Length: 323
Length: 294
Image (cartoon, rainbow over all chains, first blue to last red; front, side, top):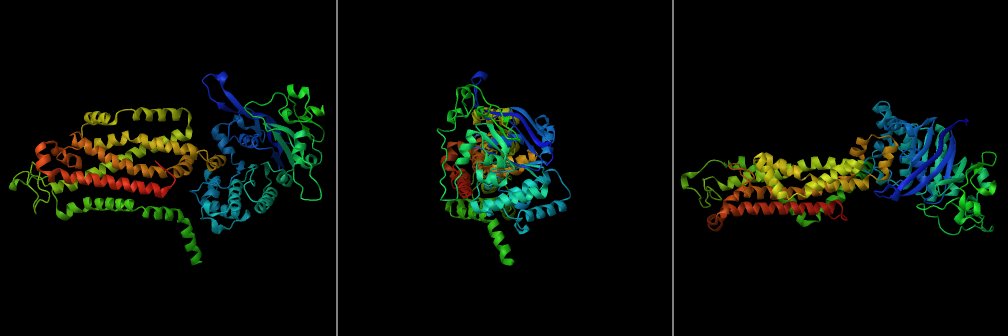
């Protein structure tokens, strides 16, 4: 692990227009990502957890510039990709890829496996056609699909097999950085483990850097080096995996971790059930966005939004409790 | 090995197989398709086979002859063989119907794709233009355009074709709006695919099926439109025959009441053709997507 981050995000914001109006002042916005800053070092896996609708997927897509950001900077290898032209960005995509959540809808039903996996090479005209074919065969072999499947179409495969095709497609152009958007949440548990192990092996083999988005804490624990916890568009805590699971600081992280079911019937899990629902992102609470559900809420939390503070050892938390 | 490859082939074609099976279960559609094919074969094969001559005047037996062994449907007021004209007219009517539909599709589908894919001002311009086109009274517009260009087979095909683009553009546009949000389109973007490749390889193949159905209905209505224009004298001009201008003579009361053999056959042909195409289109719609209703 080198010290310079491969990916660095500074104060990234993504607002969606929720209701259009000719009057600009009457437009309402959803702040899906609200001032996120993070760093991902080369060769590591950063897990990104949070409940549905907190902006995890939007953050992942915005980092890849699949959805344009509202403001903020995204550095990839020291280059601000928000400043690249569309054509420069298109060329950049060789190095940054994405594995999608739903293996049933992320493969074009009109293309066979060969065309699907070869597509990233075709786009950039990498090598001769014969070389590309060899590369596809090799890649399919690596993800555990035989080359006899090459002429088949996606609907003939199971979810796990399709996800392997999706992984082969994402990795065939030798990317450095891969955003994995809940790649195993659509798979059943037995297949999940094999796909996760495959992703781990591929990371070692190709020296990949992952941003691993998931709502499943046990999956994140299995695959991540560091973990970022996201709540309502902002990161509330970010630290190494071991530190997070042993010593969570933010009240939200504590509540999340306490809700993991224990496989031991003797031990009683005592989950801290959070009161209320996720507040509407149309009209997020002022101050700390978590204060409506936090048991340690003070007057200051309702007025002043906390920023990420380093608590030592790279353990960052955004909470007024730790001032 | 042999068994495996056979299996593969079966699986690959299972979608087309299903479509075919559903289509074959639609009796009227199968009959319609059969009639269309028969008609196309007849208008191609009959003229050389029977040495039909639609242009020479056979005035030996006088004008306006009744049907006879020599002239199966008699002759018209200039002594031309009506059966020959019926067959040649069928050629013209079918060609105008099919070609104008292809013209409509060639204009409408690309515009609909662009509007749906790029959204924004591209969409606004194209779709509002379509709205403007659709708000003209079409028959009047066609009459004016044909009058300006001079009535002929080519001008009618062009005018019907150009005016028909809105249907295809709207249909494709609405399909693209849903297809472009699919994850496989985003995944195509994520690997750096160029926009035109995304449109042609990802969006078009997944949004084209309903166009096949609209093509059939559009062909039927173009044939009818050409017939109406020719009946009014603004369409295909004699001596070239079409089913519409064969009925032109029936504007006189005498012909209408005393010489039904001149106008009933082309009218019947027209009805049968349009019905067949419409039934075929219905069957195709049910076969391609049983849930879809247009």
